[in-house]
Length: 584
Image (cartoon, rainbow, N blue to C red):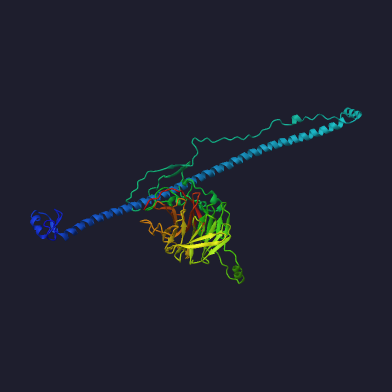
């Protein structure tokens, strides 16, 4: 209604009074006073234009902010590259200094050898002369002894004949002095302690208005780098190939250090813990240590490994799908394997020339009691073995396509039936076999499962594809989201596909729970390892250096073991249990 008379519908708007008016009130009190009165529609359109102009200005400001954020990101990437280049220059200078020290040591050793050789020759010559004199003295003694034993007449007769020879004068013929070379070390005097180099920096100004802002042009001609004893070392330095060399399991499990993050150098050092939207921006959490195994069929080698787990005693289990076996590595790194158990059916098939059945493992888990559970893709069953590789039981009832398997603290196995849409709980006794089985819950294509210390089971749901797969391998299909269920069958915490405002799952291919109760997720689509702390939020632990991660496990030593399927190896990272998460 009109704000003046409150009887008629408003049709006009007074800009001076900021009120709506009817046609009668418009002429009575407002136009006579010289107010600006317009129809409501015209005034509203004018106001919309004003607001649209302000909105456009704000959008332009937002675009400028985004450009500046992009510029800051480019600067950060360039700085990381410069840090790495300077570190490599320092390493090259250090290696050069080590080579010079080694060369100096060789020259010193050769000089010392020459002195030793000269002294040995002098001493050998003197020893030879003494030996000759000794022979002469011994001969003279024998001669005189014979003379003494002669008869009196013969002895006197010889004396009369003047047959005695003059006495030997050996003392005058032997040299009493000779020269030797005495070695001594003359140390080089250094006015300052020996150092490889020192860091020099230049102050520079960055203009964020530049669309292609970066440090490439800024550092041209600058002296930022490591200055060695002979000046600054420049040029590109080749990274050593030994960083990702193949090593054996012995040194991998026993010598992988978990100390200071600055003790290691890897790809993840630069971007593995880089902050993203919703993720923490703390110090690096995981850094590459070493690589275990390579592609092959020998013990300690892998061919398309698909699952990994660790026992409480520190033994490592890897489901080696391409080689149709499960490899077990003890604490000393000695491998043993589990293959399909022999039976009379194998003998009959081999007699008729048919292909023998194989164990095609999809997932592996171990209970605290030392029972190994394996899901077998060959006959769609769950097989149970002891740690010594002895066959215990096989279960197929009501299973259509068993895939993931995990062990609960109570000693039971939880198996996911990806096509049946259920999670099953199996109770196993090493002497009896499968004691009981019951349905834990239903889900949409549950595939990968893991369990925490409280018995809560996390499972992936949905179907997500890794579009970069090369051979259409079914085991590279992962989950779309994550759900959880308690021991009582009640559903718990859920992680939707978009776990953050700007982050989502691509292809979940493995999970585990660390000793703090945080959920670790491998995403082969993102090629990353994600951490979801109990308090909420998420962290990106490893962001680079992975080809196709399909499994992850945290050890009590502070290590993170990541199974890389397409790289056919296990990659070891440091894992610092700290809280750096922030809610998204």
